[in-house]
Image (tube, rainbow, N blue to C red; front, side, top):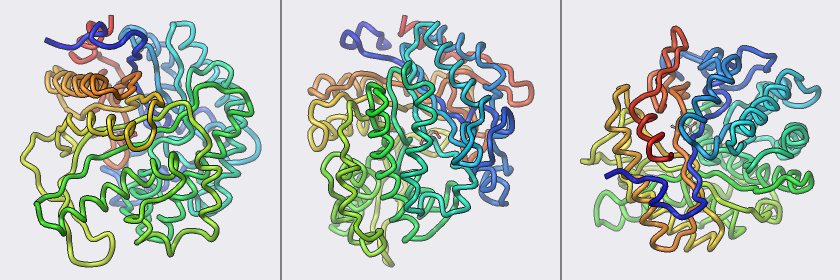
Length: 433
Ligand code: FCB
């Protein structure tokens, strides 16, 4: 038995998500260069050095793609606007073609009865700002506020919801400490500054949007459940540190105006002077919190410098990303977020899904079913979960893994760009009817 709309509370929203650089085709329509273009052009960073120049060519196939979203019966479409498409130099003169495109996207959704849920930054930083240090630069909140004003001045009156930044952990830690995403740094000082500036930028953009009268403002964080690889005290501590860096840092900043001690023990010496004063901006009130969830990691302690942890192998089934399938982590995050941080603030699952190479994809249908059950469990336990959005509408540019990992409900042939709905698309269209 699969879950259907009738198994969720009235008004619960189902949706699908994508992001600009992953689908639009960034080489077209007057967008400026981004740090993902230079990261991808550097050998060893991205599978086959692939980039988002063409991607799914969504820019030229907008109506076809919007019809596919409508065919699913989705209530909400979560998309992102590209800073570099709107302001090719990051600041200065807007690209009219870019603004027109997002206008058409929003109007096309509304014409089909779908709620537009916009994210203003999903990682394609304009290269001109990356050249000035990008997220390390204390000017970022000002630049981001100006960009927010430009794009939301244009579409802010018609969107259903807005969030400034997708997944601050990826922007900060994954990109500046692990070096796995653009700009590919491995530098603790850069990490501390990026993690802080991303939250200050979030707060500034939220204030700008409130000023413009934009409704339903939130934040989208990604969480990874962290479990100790053994009962030993060192592994327990390592897992708690992983949890603090990955999950609690951002919720703590946004909702408590404080960073966890387990993070400050490593990052505090590298934070910009006066960082505590920024919490007034960071904690600007929100209307909802978005949770992106995919997996759990088993964590063990290591010798060596902070943060002194590593991933341990797991026995559970894995997706094509090598990510463990662990639906309980989703229900645990939903209940914990409400209990420890957000109380009765509405929670949306803003991303969840799996990579799988097959087009007949019973594995994806099963994954979605299990995670929807986890959402249902959290609702039964009192978490105010109001919606669930699948990552992703269609196969797309999966960042450092290029076009190799397929998260879509719709198959994309990257030679012909033909779209073919998978079995999971048809299944969801039944469930969401
Ligand atoms: C999330 C990202 C999204 C996609 C999925 C698989 O972290 O927001 O762009 O890469 O993971």
